[in-house]
Image (cartoon, rainbow, N blue to C red; front, side, top):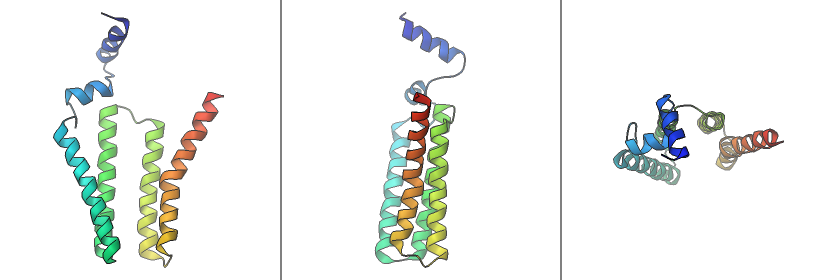
Amino acid sequence: MSDSSYLESSYNEVGMGSSRSDATGGEFFGGRREQTGLGVAYVLVGVGFFAALLTGSMALFRGVLVAILALVGFSLYVLYRREGVASNENVLTGVCVLVAMLFLFALSAYTNLPSMVVFVVVIFVGVLVPGMLVQYVANETAE
């Protein structure tokens, strides 16, 4: 038995488990069908979002927003179950994405801001802010 396999088996015996063993063992959401189903759900939500933008239907837009929130929440749950621990980066990104989705809903439903301004705010809060914060923390810990 090599040193790395000995360490991995010891690590798994302690009960910590690795995400790689969970994904290949199929313990939680590791099968091809489940992952394909989640991918198809994301594509369908994207198509619904595009259709809502083309038609200008607020009812469809709100339904798509609810579906996006549900998919993001479920994806975060899957990530938490497969990894076993929520890392600081995952929690930060998840919170920023959920806040961005709330901004998208609130700004589009309750203000008269142009859609371009709303989407800039959403992209800033959901993509750029977590990226900058993770980079900042990584640079601070490296020094």
